[in-house]
Length: 69
Image 1: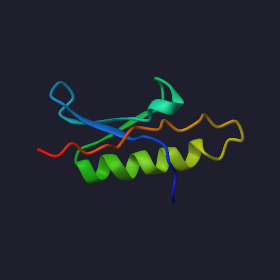
Image 2: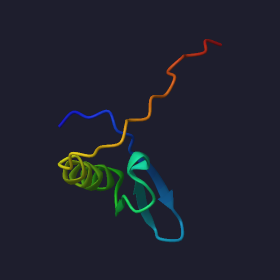
Image 3: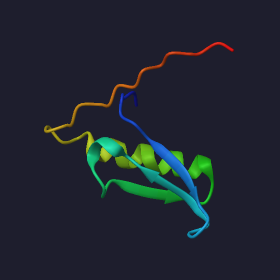
């Protein structure tokens, strides 16, 4: 699956797992995983379900400039 939606994966000390947010879909589009790979897989599955909807939000576009040191 190719999409341009954001997937934010962060470790949670409190939950002792990776918490995943899908920012374009709001505060309730979340999942988790015990490993980074599991969290990413779960996020992709959730994203697949969300993009079945006809009323999709616009993907966030981030500036990808690289600063040389």
